[in-house]
Length: 570
Image (tube, rainbow, N blue to C red):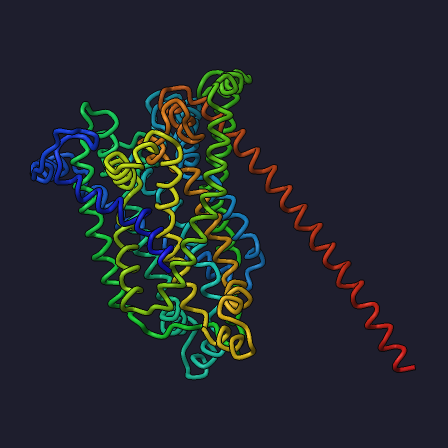
């Protein structure tokens, strides 16, 4: 337990304290002549109100969070509780859409719907003869809301996955016997039981949407948001305005604490266990006449998240003149392969995504278990407060906290300016999100499984590994998948903490895209997607081979038993 507390202190508590410390200091973290001051707070609020960044960010979160919850929750409910014929395709399609990380999706939509050179607008102008026609503008408010909501809905789906199916059928049946219809059963029985998951996801989604950076940064959005303004102040200002970023961190931490307190007060220690030793899974609902509309809605979601970004990116990588679909070539791929930092960027990003994602999941699982076993007081309350504070730190502020902490403390300053510090920061950003997900899933699994194993002679660790972990496996795999993609697609931390001259892959792609060479950036994106597709095919083939091998082994084991039974009967 002490080791776990030490890990949390280094990854989460230290940057939080550094952000608060930095918000009251003048100058940069490495400045020896910095002084205590309140000027950061006095200057920050007028500038934020003048630019509209704070209001824009709040409006964006208020608009996108309900859309993400409704769409993601609806997809998970259709997958787990209905008889829709195509429901088994939802998870692969959403997973495929999640692979199109926000950076790639924003690039694809910018190529397709940029008001000046977007493919959709170019084709529309050619067909109508109106050279000033703008059919779709991805840089507008509607475009930003669309991109942020699509990304949030996919994450919400994987966070909801399994929650509806774990609601016992006997509960829904009892509701129907009492005279309640399907809609009332859903609202009065199912939703209260999955409320811990819904509440955690709502808090996480709202805070993430409030801190959105990638989509507005890539598409060059017209509205100014908090994170884009702060990154601009740190990266493009001379000297960098670290004080403003520190104040922003304090504000977002307070907001996360307030939202978490509201959620905790609403849920408390209410019993929400839905998976016990006895009982059947949730019943299946017949969709009947809703089959075609639901299928079309799923197809539309797939087109918005996957088809349009991929098609526009592929076309941009092979067109000689942007928007001209009559001339094609491979010059963009030649320019992309000419970058000397490409190999190192790809290797570093892959290592961080796989190893860092696994580390984040394991730490988050240990923290979720410790928090749940400790209860709402003592250690559990301390961990909950730490995670709520860390959850309120966007990647930009997390990077700022790492900068303050790792440049001022002896023994840690050697990590500054290396990708090792970016690795630590990315793991730290993923842990609170994963822990909230796993904590909600653990609360739905009764501890009676472990108690039964302990009574049978197993120790608690063995009981947890043999019974609880298999039940959590879908959530663990989903968490690893989400963490890997979040780390691979994160832009703000590599921009602020990455090693100079040794960028990560998405940092390299976004730099090429923003510098004007969209075709080369699209070519690198296509290569990345091709590698992912190859890995996916290899994984599917290996899984099929392992299943076939397992079936053969089970058949071989069953033959001697069958022979003995035949001999005994004869």
